[in-house]
Amino acid sequence: MSKRWYQENRRDPWRREARSKGYRARSAYKLKQIQDKFGIIRKGDSVLDVGCHPGGWTQVAVEEAGENGFVLGVDLLSTSPIDGASIIIGDISENSTLEEISNLLGDRNLNTVISDISPKLTGRYDTDQAISLELSTLVLDKAMMMLTPGGNFVTKIFQGTGIEGLMKAAKQRFSNVQRYAPTASRKSSSETYLICQNKLPRVKKGAQGKTAYQQVQEHLEEIDVLVKNSEMDETPTVKGFRRLKKK
Image (cartoon, rainbow, N blue to C red; front, side, top):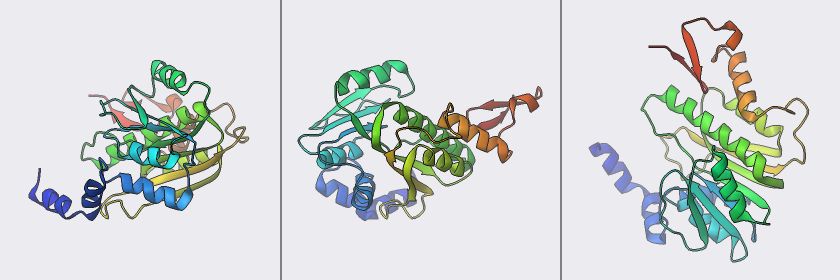
């Protein structure tokens, strides 16, 4: 851990504020600012927090949904219990996790999916941005499977290649889609948040029969970031949204 990183975090006003108010992470204030501007969580809503560890966003969701709401957090990592929320350990890409989420929801409609999910950073920006795009697109597809019409979706994305493809896919699924950078984000960060409101009853023409993941892949092929399968030779291989070389 560098001395500079330690000094910056020690001076961080959002970290100090989060600690003084009992929030588990400074990121709680990012969701609070998103909520203040867009009102994505309403009283009585059922909310799913994907990638909830350590629990800052889940805490805010509990506050905003109120006593009559239902908040469920899911993460690969174990998260300490949070009053007013249910927490499970699971991988959102696995059917077993989706089934557990459905069982816990019961007869409730899922109104909002929030996700501050982030990859384990490698320090190589292009790789980290590609993995982040892949994760956010995956969460969007899972959210579409569970959200009730009129529901809202929020996810973190890193600025960079492919973001326009994700924006387009989201606009074909929600009536209002915007990018928003909370002031609580670090000035040095390239993160922004995709705010999707009012899930449409049906996906718009042009996206029907396709997942958001497929659409983003098509977008990356169009801008020559990914190689189409038909054009691949023995050298390149594609993994997710990253073009890799065989060793």
